[in-house]
Image (cartoon, rainbow, N blue to C red; front, side):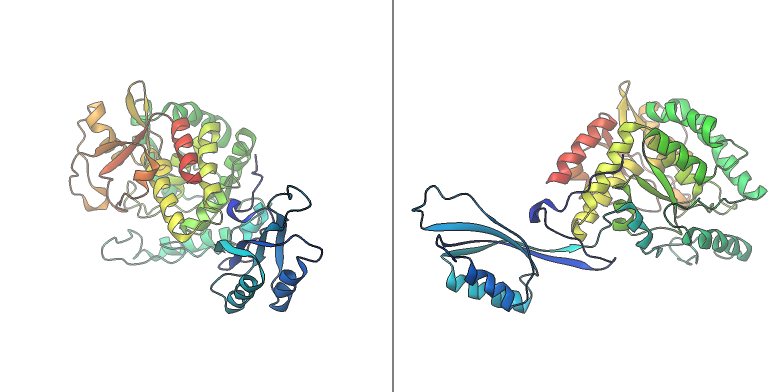
Length: 418
């Protein structure tokens, strides 16, 4: 189910994207009217040539009502932005020789991949942790002072960095200690599986056990999961060195590709990680990518990110946080977890649903070991969620509850079109 990628709708079908990450495509659309006579377009076109501006699209707004119509109006898309001096000079000359001229829009469109192969070019520059851990005093990484752990992560990360589309994903031979960490989290999550997780998760998780090697004493391999998901919904997994930018991560979802880490959190704190790890990815995200509605929902967010401004990327990433990462949906009259940040954390999943499920387990606020106050529930509304601040290293004070995964998808579609 790879998407048929459209060019940004506001610029027309002749728009082309920037070629490399970090580049911007500069495009302007204008409307102008000239005399309806033989050679009436020659002078405007010669002005574009004079300023070395490439036209991408030129078409009449409508056919003249009759041969006696005195003017014809044209739509024109061309390379360049109204900030550019040569474009300003061109437009000034066009205003002088046309009957009417106005700028419909002028945009700087960030690079985005237009084929799945171009995901190879995404710069895997981690924003946190990854190959080299940071010693953040406010959010210390449990493995920062463990040289053996850091060496192990470097080896896994470097294998991921060498991956290219079409390759077989490198397999990781996990150690007994790493499998023990996975197993400890598995044991606690299974206690909440029947009562706290959404129906889609409960249906698909056993399929991961049957087909992908999920087990308390085995960490599944990304290649096996990717092959299974591709058969189920068209989603595939791609290894990544660490936390990507919001733009790069969301762009990949447009192609039904999920970037996943392969390293695991430090064994000293099996129930806490300051950044995504293989437990979060495989216990939280992967099972729901086998659900068609959830897969469509995730891709919807990805498609909306293609060519979006930095401000819109931030809004989309925030919506992603409150849905795919920490979303709740209402089933059988009660909220259930469908966000991966909840599904992979028995502590926060218990905390998030304690008020509605009567869970007496006290909430501990992330890495701080501080009791957390009861959370607030709000109906899922992407327009409101996009503006809501959120913490990274503590339990969420606010959770958004969708009526269903399909409802969340429909609301996100409306939001993306805005």
